[in-house]
Length: 155
Image (cartoon, rainbow, N blue to C red):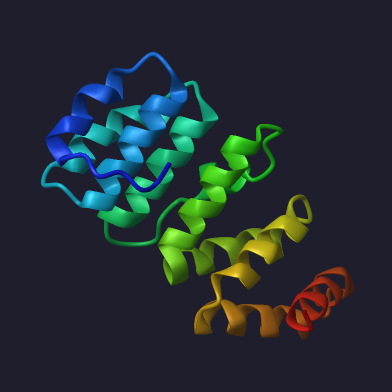
């Protein structure tokens, strides 16, 4: 879903597609290509009824804008019952790499829900920042967090 060889201007008409996966794919493609004015085309979809589209907008915001991205919609997608949604979120986190680490860490520390999945995503990033975050989690006084992180570090 992330990889798309279309020209940036070819994606804009697909933003109004009836199917959420079509809108999400177009948003992700625009973000990957970094086309001029892409964020202005994507931003209106922030409140889209589809969680998949909102996840794609979060990914695009992280790719195209400065500052700390709000990746909560992508984190929420990891808990989806739809395999395609989960795969999209995982692919997006991998594409973002270290940019995603602070958001993942903040969520893991603040909430138990989804902790195992997020720690797994963190371990799959295979970056120095992700490894450092897992190592810090392994030293946490929160025993559940520490045990999960240690298990991932030992894999």
